[in-house]
Image 1: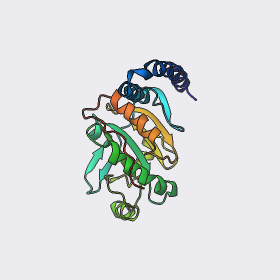
Image 2: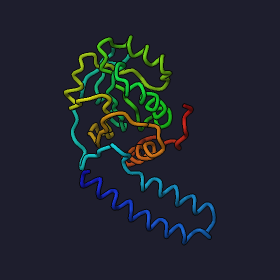
Image 3: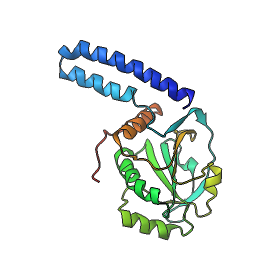
Image 4: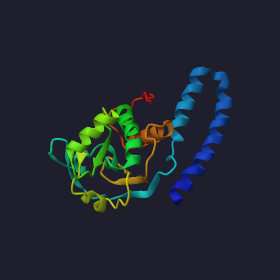
Length: 213
């Protein structure tokens, strides 16, 4: 656990105690005041979910090259101005198959001018394999991004799949999570919403809505 994570958890514990005292004090002020406080508490207390390791300070990140589903060249810098959740995966990776629908639902929930899930496949069979995979598991909201060379693995210091890197609007790495995760879980969505808001997203972040399984 990093010093930053320990500090965030300590601060969160203190905030919880103070918020509970404030909640007790304004209970008689009416339901609207209580709901307002609870909404603020959700935003303030949204820390990194289990397994998500945040950097003490944002780190520079290689501007890796890849292509879209039509073979057009892309780089990470194409997404500057957005918070990006970069997920490196492959169709032959069983944990990737499990988590991909949750990434799809996350994109449906938070995707927009301020945030995007970038699912980067390293399949050597390219777009054909990814199109089949997306069709098989019902992906509807994720664009295709492909690195058939696999060079992104070394450029991003990724040693296993899936690997997910959280990138700020300036293209810097905020942190990463190694292995699969439930990306549309309420605590994950709340955490990512707080990151988007801190990065000054140009569009309002929608309220969390549970997507159908």
